[in-house]
Length: 166
Image 1: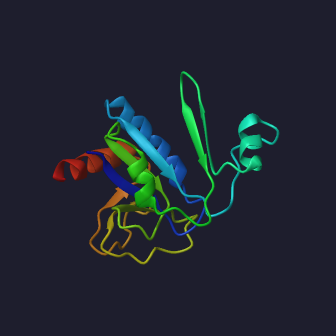
Image 2: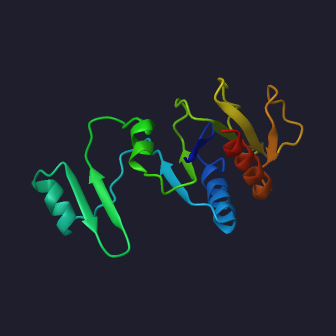
């Protein structure tokens, strides 16, 4: 079963994506299978105007899948944010870790990214926070471990221990 956790921060540009990329690389180097889910608070478009899949959607298809030998992509139109739990359920048992970027309100374990020079504030933490990744070594963290954001291997060690705990 995959260990699912979220990387969150108080604002954009605090380094969530950079940290996630390093975590993915380290987990892959250790032989783990990793999937990700990224929340975007803005509307986005991955389809390109004029392409067949775009034309299918514009004609009224609510879900479009494009497939090749090396990957497939599903585009599903929605009227509201899809709950992250539904998105996690879409990922089969092919992953050891599922890394979520965002979804601060979810019930999944969370690591807060806090950078002195980029974070607007520390997040109000509920019982789902398991650690803080920061470049502030003496950060007051409500009894949460403060992990060095510049040492992703240590963060991965922490995550592997959390997975082993169940």
